Image 1: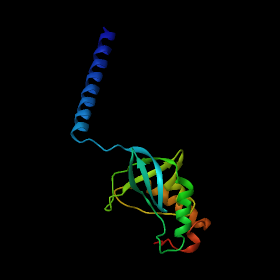
Image 2: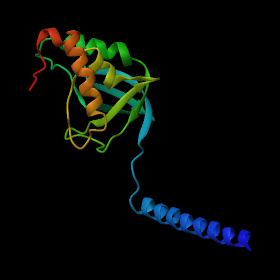
Image 3: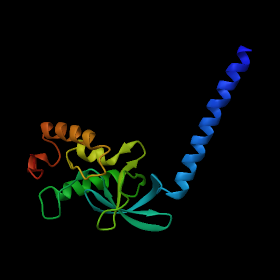
Image 4: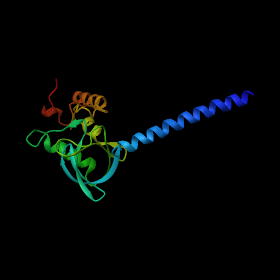
Length: 167
C-alpha cells in the first residue's frame, strides 16, 4: 500500500511538471525570443569596441556591450583599436546577447568571445576599455568594473593617457 501511495505522489509531480513545460512552450511560441548567441567571422575592425562580423553570409556591425574605448579624436584610440584587432581580427567569434538586440544606430549589441577569451573583459582588463553601464544590458557590469579598477591601479593600457573619466 505504501508503494502505491508513493506512485500516486510521483505521478502527480510528473503531471504538474508536464503542465508547466507545456505552458512554457506555449509562451515561447507566442513571443519567440531572438537567439541568445550566434557565431560569425570578423571581417573588419572599426575601432576598439566595434567590429563587422559575417554571420550566415551577411555582414553585421557589432558594438561590444558594457565597455567603451577612446574615440577617433582621443588619445589612445589607435592603441585600443590595435588591441581589439589583436584579439579578434580574422577570427571566428561567438556573439552573446544580453537584453537588447541592437542600439539606436542598428548595430548588434553583443558580448564577444574568441574561443575561451571574453573579448569585452580582456579589453577592460588590459586597460584599453572602460566599464560602462548601458541599461538594460548590464549582466557583466560589476565584473567589468572590477577589471577596470585593477587596470587603473596598475596604470596600464589607456589609463596613463587619462582618457577615461572617473566619478
